[in-house]
Image (cartoon, rainbow, N blue to C red; front, side):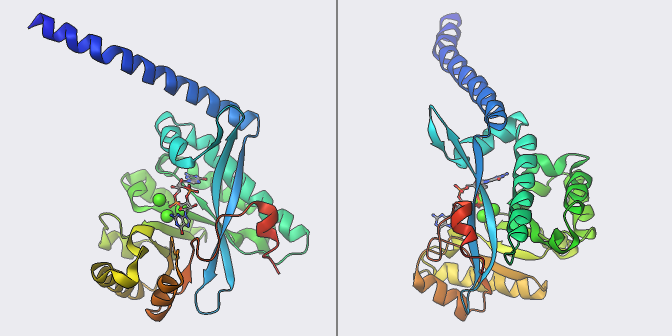
Amino acid sequence: GKAEGRGQISVFQPAMAKYAVLQLALERELRQALALQEFRLVYQPQIRLHDTQLIGFEALIRWYQPQRGEVSPIDFIPFAEQTGIIAAIGDWALDEAMAQVQAWASAGLPVVPIAVNVSALQLSQLDFADSVIRRIRRLPIFLQDKIVLELTESTLMQAQSLQSLQVLTQAGIAVHMDDFGTGYSNLALLSRMSLSKLKFDRSLIQNIPDNHAHQQVCRALLDLARALHLEVVAEGVETMAEAQWLNAQGVQYAQGYWFSHPLEKEQAQRLLV
Ligand code: C2E
Ligand code: CA
Ligand code: CA
Ligand code: CA
């Protein structure tokens, strides 16, 4: 009855109010973080498995907040997506990656492509593709293929997102499918998208030399990748045994702690030779 209802309210309200206050604080801090330049990108090497040559970097965002210390993207990216501020953060990340490519080229270094993560909200925005194309076109021509985009299949739930993807790939921008093999895949759709690479998710790769079920899934996904003429990057490779197994199966590329953790830009630069 009534007493029960009041009871529920008195139990829930303080917690919800506290959560709302936390959210407001975080949203304000994320806006400030952009203004105060508290974000930076770190760069995780992607290598060719058969000779461990560097073929690219994935740019991963880092936030150093003076009071909180380092905040993991896992703790703020989902929230940034809910509030919409991911659009501004994503713009910042793309501009920062482009600036890095230019800085390395200006220093006479052999630049490899940098993959920038794109969130669902960004891709669903009407002007996203045109804005990305416009900005990449401002790079010297020989650097325009040095920015690639990483997105997950779950970002493609809206018609506008598919439209954005098509506009981007038709403009010649390479798009890699992230976290592949984790969820539902629309194979018909996949075959119609002009992707450049598939990134096999870490959850599939982990302990693969000892996991018969994962081996079978991995082989099936590799057949699929071959049928679609897509190269594969294995993510989250942590051991030599994993790297060897993947190489033996014909996986072309890998990324993971076995080869390198994400690196600060100065360390990443030393790999460009
Ligand atoms: P993701 O795109 O799947 O990125 C790979 C994550 O796995 C990174 O975590 C990376 O540091 C971590 N990782 C790499 N190798 C290994 C390994 O061998 N073992 C293990 N256990 N982990 C490995 P990170 O940097 O904490 O990023 C987490 C997620 O946050 C990313 O997952 C991505 O979804 C999101 N994120 C990061 N930066 C950005 C960004 O600039 N924009 C957007 N929209 N999302 C971002
Ligand atoms: Ca990624
Ligand atoms: Ca991933
Ligand atoms: Ca992920």
